[in-house]
View (cartoon, helix red, strand yellow):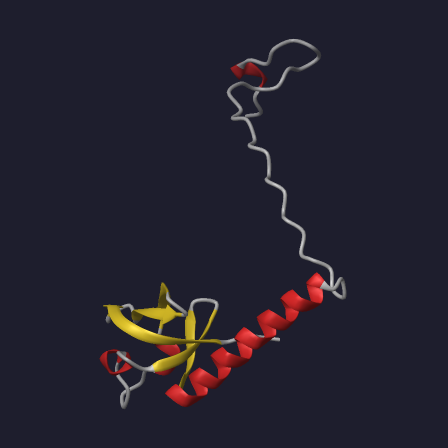
Length: 123
């Protein structure tokens, strides 16, 4: 299942690369608008348009009323999920632990308990 989030295009970042800035609930992100542009709708015509955004791409154009309805529904779903979590009906999503930093390798591994040298490297 894919979820498209409504956002309004507020700026064209790079017309040649088809990049624009979208406002999604007050958060601005750069997205690709290639899927919604064509000869009849060039990149610059996207300015001010409402679009459904999924994984950094504007997937389709929508009107302001559809954007408003979808945003209201998403808000309701978020509130309902928070209420269910508070009642213990759904588990809370656990935090993802930090991945420890991997130390940089500065020397070759030992061979037979002796430090390896450049002569031990395969040809």
